[in-house]
Amino acid sequence: MNRAQRLREALTSGRGAHWHPTDALVRGLALGVGMVVAGGLAHEVALVLFGAPLLISTLLALVTPVLGTPTVRVRGLPRTGEIGAAKSVVEVDPGLGAEVMAIRLPGVGDGGVGPVHLVPASAREIEVVLRRDAWGEGVDLRPDHLVAGPDALFVHGPITAAERGRVILPPVEALPAGLLPARAVGLVGAHRARRPGDSVELRDIRAFQPGDRLRRIDWRVSLRSSAMAGTAEGTNLHVREHHAEADADVVLALDTRQDVGAELGEWSAPARVTTAGPLGRSLGEWSLASRGTTARPGGSLDLAVRAAASLAAGYLRQGDRVSLVDLGRPRLGARPGVGRRQLLRLRNQLVVCARSAGWAQRPVLRPEQVPHGALVVVLSPFLDAEVVELAVHAARRGNLVLAVDVLPEPLRADPETPWGVSALKVIRMEHDVRLQAMRQHGVAVLRWGAPIAGVLREARTGRRLHR
Amino acid sequence: MRTELGAGLPGWVLRAAVGGVAAGVAGVLVANGVEWLAIVLYGVLAAAAVVIPASAAVALIIAYPAVAMVFVDGETSWAGVLALVVLLHLLHVLSAYAAIVPIWSRIHLEALKAPAKRFAAVQLSVLALAAVVILLPGGRTGEVVEVIGLACALGLVVGVVLLMRRKS
Image (cartoon, rainbow over all chains, first blue to last red; front, side, top):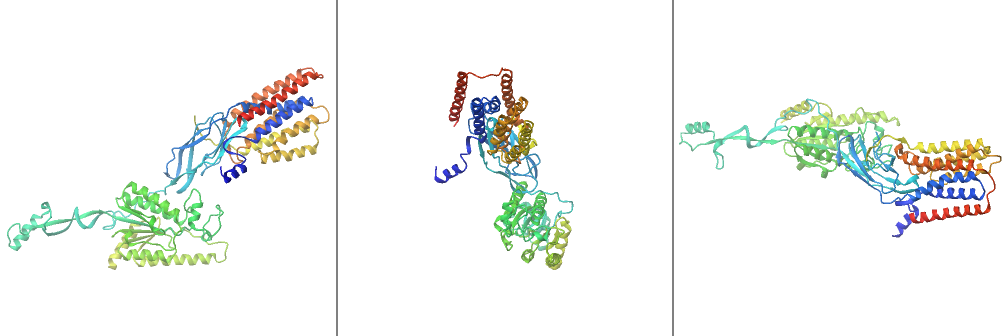
């Protein structure tokens, strides 16, 4: 045992992971024996009667063996989950002679790790209901425990248990009809690619080349062209070339640099009032310090993540390939993929991105992160010019860009400053100017919740006319 | 045995029970003619015991009435003594359990079943002893009997110490 351990042992009076007597034992012994003996000496029967119950109950506790090391184990807690209630089982082995146990568990209707419950030690399996109402990382269980013998005269603990948490995935909201484009030709949906392939859609009829399959020869065109050229049969063969079928690429570009709510007064104070942290902390620190929720509930990042999850689910259901780019931390994206596993991967990655929010000043979207012809969906509150430039640059590279505005509405002025209303007006006007600038550069702009299909169609038509 | 965690009672109920029992003890003391100043002091100690059940205040609020009842002027009533026998033991047990759970914990009554049964058994035995004492004729005890009684008490103490050493 080193010096630090000895010091800790001295400070905690030997309490911890072993059976030790409590103040109640000392009290029961001292008062019980003292009153019985004093009553006997002073010929006071009343004193003997007062001391007798204390002495008897203490002796009963002493003769009851309390042995073993109590163990607590959590069973059936998945790593990820959905918003709402889930069940888990806490297995308890209280040891020999234990009578009651104080254990920290989530209570009925409580979130978080919950209060301490005084339960009988005979309960070997305790079923607990875990409730989380916000997506993100959080601690669901920390079964700190203390096991007590008869009359709590001997206790084992308190033991601080390891935290057990889950990642609650962002919810997927069913998009209303018309929100997703059914099939934006050449861009999203079940699409034909520019390259030749095996679909049934005709791409071209060209002269036969070595390597072409014989079944692709268009005999009617070949005969007609041979007849017109006056050459011998078979020397002027033509083949039918078809388009390839390819999945479309959708890039969800999430702006995690800012997380703002509807209250302007809270924009400069990232720490929530409940966390009581110092002002000026980075958003990343705030999100880590905050338990049970990764982003500000109802804030722009919360809205952006929910929108990204819902869009990803919608496009993946159509069979498209969806990837995720974190504009604040480009390394945290997810590669393009299809199917239900990709949706799970994206929802997990959205939580990771939101956890690391507020890391960068400038948004980054590298050209190699955007496949050719992909639909780029930029989810941002558009509170600075950099993200607008990024969206415009993506549009100039030839991609159809959809800017989803996730600024909470309606914004409310800071009531604590006389400049609150004026500041709100300036922010509102700057925001409108940015959105208008994007529209002028061919970027489809919409608020989250408005139908996407019509906006995309308009943007595509505008781009064609522009070309 | 698998159990579902119910709502339970709030943790402050145990401390409130300590306060309630202490109030009952104070009432018994008042009924037996203990001075008001002593009762006020007892109230202060009881408040300290409610706030910190793991403190020495609990020992004081158990010892104080016992001594006060014995040394109070005039004749003490057996009813008061018997009431204190129950209440002081209850104070001891409630404080012991209140000391191991935080005030904002949840108390599930099933946890207190076994302690309640033991409490009742101990009280029955002590009250039976009290009945024997009340029924026995009074009078001076012989010196030999007193010496034997003291030796028994000493043996009791030695036995307790030996039991504690074996535990640790």
